[in-house]
Amino acid sequence: MDKTKRKAIIAGNWKMNKTPNEAKELLNAITPLVKDADCEVVACVPYVDLSVALEVVKGTNVKIGAENCHWEKSGAYTGEISTGMLTEMGVEYVVLGHSERRQYFGETDETVNKRTKAALAAGLKPIVCVGELLWERECDITEEVIARQIKLDLFDVSAEDVKKTVIAYEPVWAIGTGKTATADQAEEVCAFIRATLAKLYDKETADAVTIQYGGSMNDGNADELLSKADVDGGLIGGASLVAEKFAAIVKAAGK
Ligand code: PGA
Image (cartoon, helix red, strand yellow):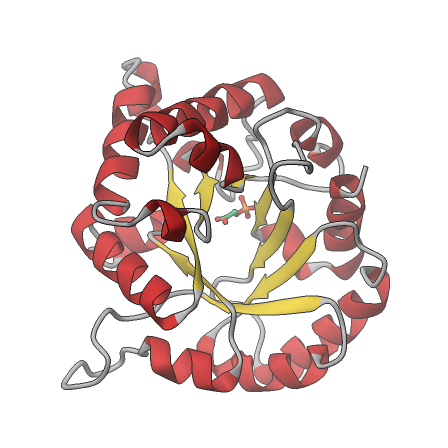
């Protein structure tokens, strides 16, 4: 990562894990371990954990994110959460377009784009996830898939706003599988994402965007992944649920 040009961000994506009480316990364990972090530290937690999470991190360097948001401000959308509900609480980040939402909940690039624009308009920092399926990689169309997602998910997002957007490159085959992309594979696609942004916007804008890697990143492989020039942080699933492992990844991002 290149900290002279952009912010390094390590974000936990808790997914559907931890009750409010468990969230309190985990964040109480994480905060002292990451207090001297030389990067931005974020925990993206289930909606029902947000309140207690924000309370626990008050006065610390840990930021809180949600795992999704709707694009409408309010209305008849049973079960959905608006950006205003999140910002009023003090939430700063929101994960959008995660492959699990694309795979199980009908998320499309069109809805990711709507959510991204709504999040930015509300002042939230979106973490937009992109990534190829295993068979797309095997068919050698990774770059086409990623370029398509970047173009569609960021359609109509201004250069100024894209600088506030975090992109998480998460090869779907590496998520929760224990199969990490090699550091070279991660770097190749993160650099490709930056080149795509440079074409869509300009080099200065592309250089300012934080691009994370996600997919079985852990305390054992974080050093190598984060040593790559275009890997500016990580979106961490499983390892973010264990305070010591998450803190070790944060430490690796400080090197
Ligand atoms: P994982 O999940 O670290 O458990 O592979 C990453 C993610 O889905 O964001």
